[in-house]
Length: 139
Image 1 (cartoon, helix red, strand yellow):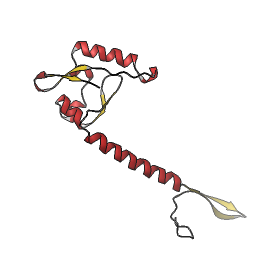
Image 2 (cartoon, helix red, strand yellow):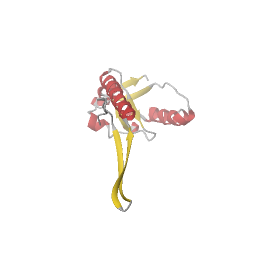
Image 3 (cartoon, rainbow, N blue to C red):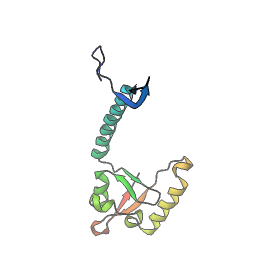
Image 4 (cartoon, rainbow, N blue to C red):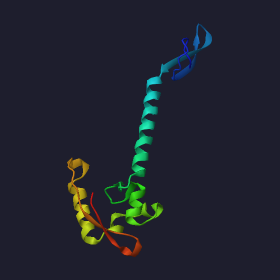
């Protein structure tokens, strides 16, 4: 909507047809949502900025759920593991860790979960796809 002064405003409108003095009439309510739309656009721009940073850094960054499945990872994680993205997304931590490191990982997930409000750095040995080569992960 453009105001009398020429300012652009976002509105949300609701209408209902009703009777007024025995004639049909529309009851219309309009809410100015310009601030909300501006905040949404600022959020989109911020997300785009940080997504670009995450996707282009050389360090691996991943989100792994409590069951050990990848929820998100950047290209560097694919390079570190040696798997294409579509294969890596299907893996569980048991697929790229030996038994000892998988056990350590699980214990730390439980001990240092977000509910425990603690953080811990953990060094782990990972198995790469190519020749099952071992690499060390230093978070």
